[in-house]
Length: 184
Image (cartoon, rainbow, N blue to C red):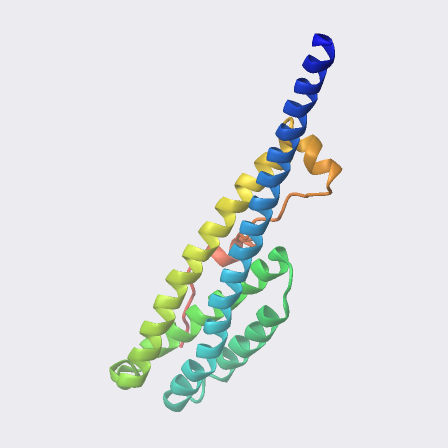
């Protein structure tokens, strides 16, 4: 009788441990999905702001057609990307194109003095900070999830319930780390 009670207690401890591990993995997965949704919200705000910024700069620097086309092309690509790897690559290209647009604006003092441009530039700067914070949070949650998915004994539970590691949102191309070269 005592042996049966010990076995039942051990099985209960194992069951509760597995339930706890499973719940923590699901919690991390939900937090990662939520963090990804936060990134999407910030990027949507950025995508909505870009056409206004481009139109404002266009009014002063109409001959910079290639810069405007790049921004539009990379904005469309970024909006179409779905996975973290695709989104990361597209966002890096868009950021690089936006830096080029802002560098073009630096060559036009009357544009820099424009209240509308300053407001848009300030909004973009604030959005870039919000996007960076959302990326950092997402990557931190993904790091925690990936660690749990790959370490014992939670890797066994993750395998049983098909909980997989997620991709980080990072810079994939070395050119995205380089400053923008402005040529007039």
